[in-house]
Length: 265
Image (cartoon, rainbow, N blue to C red; front, side, top):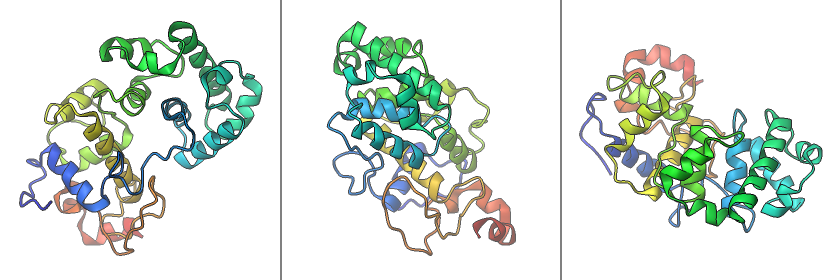
C-alpha cells in the first residue's frame, strides 16, 4: 500500500503499519509465511508465556535455544514446570539474563496457575482488565510481559510497548510525544487510540516493529541498507533494501547522507 503523505508529523499509526506490512508481509497469524514467533511445542500459550519471561533483557536467539532445551526436557507442560527443580531449570535456560531468578519465577508462575485455575486456558479466558491486574502481581511480570502474554497467548486486545516501539515512533513521529520518556500506559494509549481493538492487528503490528528494529532501526541505524542479518523472522531480503520508513523518518531526513553513511556500514 503506497501513501502520498510524507510529513512525519502527520503520518498516522495505521499508515506506519501498512508500510511495514508492504515491506515484510504478514509476520503473525495464518497469513504469515515466515512467522515472527515460531512455536515448537504443542502448547503455544504456555510456550509464549515462557518466552515472554525469558526474553526480558535477553536476545531472542538465546531464548529460542532455552525454549528448545525446555521442550526436549518435557517442561513445556504446566504440571511438569510447576514441579521442576529450580537448579535444573536454571541450567536449561542459561545463558538467559537472570537465569536463576527466571527459573524460580517460571516455576512459581506455573504453580500459581495450577492452584488458581488448574490450566492456562482457564486463566487466559478471564476478563482482560482483571487478568492484567492479576498478572502484574505475579513474579517476573511487568506491564510489557503481561501484555505479551495477554496478546499472543490469550488474544486479548492489548498493544505491547517495548524499547523498539519507543525508538521507532521517536524517529518517525517525534513531535507527537516524548516517546522514550513517556509512561508505558501513555505510549500504549497514543498508539491504540487510532487503531481498531483487534488482537490480530496488534500482534502483527508489534511483530512488524520488532522486525524493523532488528534489521534497520538499530541504535546505529541502517536506513539505506543493507539490513542487518539478524531478524526475528526467517525472511530473506535484498541486500540493497532500505528501511521502509526512511522517507518519513525525522532522523533520516536530518542526519544527511554523510552522517548516515557512518551508521549504515
